[in-house]
Length: 266
Ligand SMILES: O=C(O)CCC(=O)C(=O)O
Ligand SMILES: [Fe+2]
Image 1 (spheres, rainbow, N blue to C red):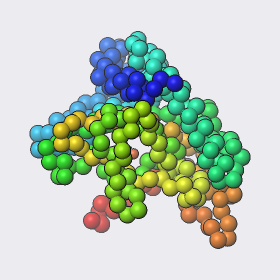
Image 2 (cartoon, rainbow, N blue to C red; image 1 turned 135 degrees about the vertical axis):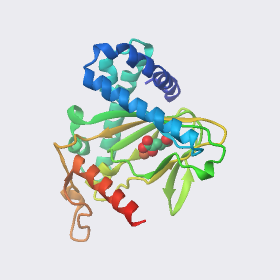
Image 3 (cartoon, helix red, strand yellow; image 1 turned 180 degrees about the horizontal axis):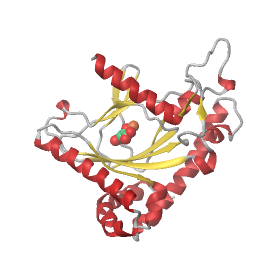
Image 4 (tube, rainbow, N blue to C red; image 1 turned 90 degrees about the horizontal axis):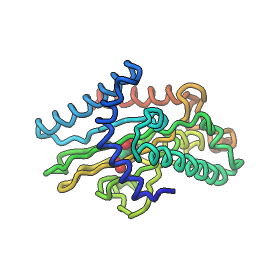
């Protein structure tokens, strides 16, 4: 496997070159998709601009891509080959981790993998987070506290601290360990395991001196095909189901609705 270090260099290049490449290839793409991508990028850049003009330093999602689409765009650069290789390797890693988690739950090895859609349906999505430098980091928040909706999330970053995890009632800054990859368990696994594995609450902070960039790959089940609910083996009389059955799409909707309600009541 390409080492995490070489992978983030490559992904960094992808982040920098993607606007140009997409512009160049825009004509050969279906118009609606090209427009969609373009709008998303303009929105991200505007967020950055408004943030810096108003003195409010925000983090920006600079880019949001499906890895499979990246490959289909056929970006003719070493980034395209390495990015798809990175996706392929991550997919293998996800399988191994899902096997280990299944065994921990007393399930058959391939069970969780099957429950999240198997090889065919599990979707890998890449999101690049760009955190601008901020002279007063205590007044700004990059990515607000959340849990990931994914089954698993894999993160590489440019070795600038900023990721924090809510652990034992406190925010703890994740160490920057060279040549390592960060993995989160997301809501999907929390639901299937009936809360035996926790989807970790985390956030991203801006840094006073350095730009921070992170590349997060979310491994997600299909939106509508699968009903997510605690697996029967994880439920008992003393361990009743903690989550109602919902598709992934319904789970996202439920989270957004809850967030809106929370905001309204604050
Ligand atoms: O920037 C990071 O390290 C984490 C970002 C994150 O939590 C996310 O994109 O969901
Ligand atoms: Fe996250």
